[in-house]
Length: 549
Image (cartoon, rainbow, N blue to C red; front, side, top):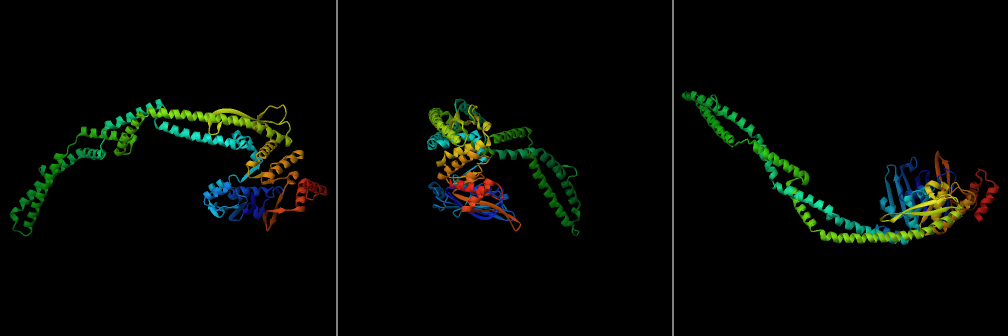
């Protein structure tokens, strides 16, 4: 149970500590004083969305710390799994700074939000007027019914979960073997086509690189022949080629060798002449070896296109394509020999489907039997809550079995004798839904922890208010109950009273929360009765009378 709550810089609350009783805790205060801030603070410390707008104006850090007593063995086990120290007391703190960074600690150990939610999942059940709207959603009705039935349903659901896990594994194996006959034959044909397409290409490792080099060379052969031929003509073939001109120049100097520097020039011209001759011979060799073959070029181009197409289908290079080929051959071999295994798996699948159908049918029978008890108890609770003549029924429709069974469940309701039973969303008012939610809570006392009611009694009065007060008090005998109320008779049933007040201090608006005793309790309940700033003696006497009952 929640024993205390420390709040700092949270909305209008600057600093306050609130202690709670194990029974019925009533939160009182004028409208707008900040009572709901306490509920928001509890939600925040238990893992609700961190909202920076809740940070008190002008502050950089808000903090909420909650202390829980009588920690369950289930929670202790969870704490041990997470490596957190545990005993009968659990301390949870959560901070949020102006940058949106949140830090969560459980018994001093820092944890992530997911872990916090796992630890505190069953700590507090919040019930406000808006929560009763959950009753309208038919998707929740099966969960309500199963919660009412309890562990007997859990056993069947555990079985169904196991069967569906088994079914999924069998279906995976069947799919891996190609599925049914038509699917398997289709897959085998695809594999045969892929194998034939790759094998017919006769690929070899390194082939693509060789083809590209050869393609580039042949593509350039025509230009090589043209340019080399022109170079040869300039060097040696033309009448005025470079080599003939150099030779003539050398000859012209041959008779002048005795003159200074001419002999040296003659020798240099001779070297140039022989160098040109050597270059011409090399180019002749290049020209003789260069063969532009457009037919071969087209063949290589088509081969490269084939490899490109295979790469697009089967892998990014020839090595991967050949690996795909090996895998496809192995897969085809497995499929070809899978008939016997498929027959075995199909038998197993049929057996599991029978178990699912049988278990779903048994679960449905249980639900229908227990639904009558739920109907009767809800009608009795509503009768106590001044909704006499109310009819409440659980409607069943059959569906294909799932992990939740074969039932589609919908609650139908009539508030008056003789009226047709209809969906809750079409017939129940807001006040009726609130009392329905209270009725559900009252018959599921052993399945909850701390329960928080946020003005669930809004809009009711007279005898109905008295009955609601009795129901809330009854719940508090079994569960720690925290209730925000403006109804005097509800407030009078409290065991612990917390007063929320709002005042201005140094230009700041501040909400505070504190426990009150004795005459302060009488005064606050009298204020709910009188509704005036100056409380009458009659109201005070009436408050005392309510508290004495």
